[in-house]
Image (cartoon, rainbow, N blue to C red; front, side, top):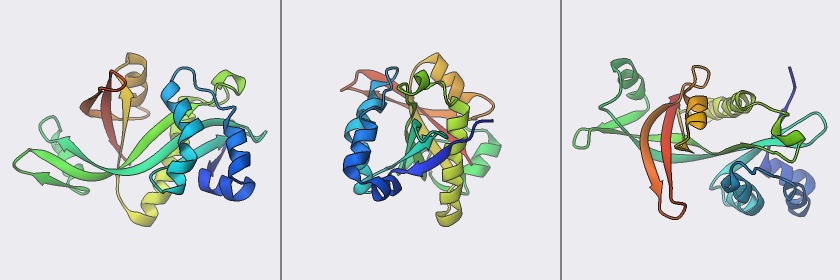
Length: 194
């Protein structure tokens, strides 16, 4: 099994400086999702400095950034109607049910960006499941310090992405959708417990 180190962007700024980090990130490439590439190249550092979100780098044994994920915290609403009794019971630990809307309001962790660096071995150095494992390692550490237990993400309405996130291994469940007028893209919102 390959070994990857997870490095917080703020720690990387502290270690090599913002100018050198920008230089490292200038080689990041994610042609299958230009939104991720744009975020890493243009927003990740500023968002981290403002504490809006924190990006983590999966670094291989050669010290190259092979993938990234970005985490944030956000309030969401999850509809009650399509939840099984066991999921209702579990979500009640973290959320409040609004009897008028029939939705749970919950403070959740957001996986805001999640992708491979195709500039390194065409993105083949790390699998999606390995990257998800690294993401949940960080989330579990955060959970130990501040609590919480729900994570969510948004992905384009594409079968391959939905199959990956909803697989038995990853276990995300759809709860809503959002249409971006700017991008003209429909996003499916999915959540999971951890």
